[in-house]
Image (cartoon, rainbow, N blue to C red):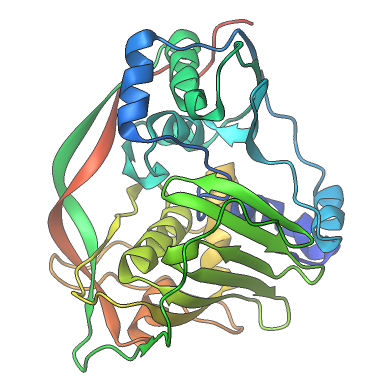
Length: 354
């Protein structure tokens, strides 16, 4: 999922926050996926890595991570796949399952500990395999080593509906629709192309910590951490409401824990828009709970049919996620909707030995 640069002292203090903002659940930073049809075909032939090792991930060197980002270098986190090797670095089991089944992490229904322990995987691709085969091979590996059993289902669940506010949206429509990414075009200096669930993403980190994610026809998102205002800033151009709903789903998954609800676009808006959000660091600090740091619990949801109560924020710039949405003339309402889920029937915490 976006990279944020804090001063080294601040990063040491809030290392879990920094790490999770780099981590895979936010904005699918380095997701590698093929089409569902390709995966089903691969599953039938039981594609598998030639050899693979799974190890618990070592703690990250936060100072080194900060130095890499400040120098504009992409940290080695998440999946890296080519024709000969596949590596998955510092990833939770939940992230690995999302990759294997081509779903978003917030679509997975399973035990809460899926997002706690992190693993490093190194695997050798068999001769003739391509990166499109990797998800099916990863699925086989998880089935064999973690005894994973899962199935896809459509379920009616409580969701957060993204709807127009009482006085209507306050959104500026983009002057032009964004163009798809030309995968054959040369990369710009410092730019890296990664494969997301919904298509390629071209990402660049500037020395000041600004991250630009060009998602082609889905728009561009620029993310930056403002250490003075203690806020996380998002500036988006050409983004659809479905894209905004996905971004909010990922933010709320991180800030609210396992009981966060998926955000579903019900605005009826079909255009591409300029979207600006500034989220307080206090809200984002709840990210650390996913890494085991003791944090204040989120206030309980309000009564059915009403908007959830925003989480209290410490002094500083930015607002809560819910308040930021309301400033755009939109609203998050609790509703029920049929959503696609990946239901975990069985999984082990610890993999079998290499």
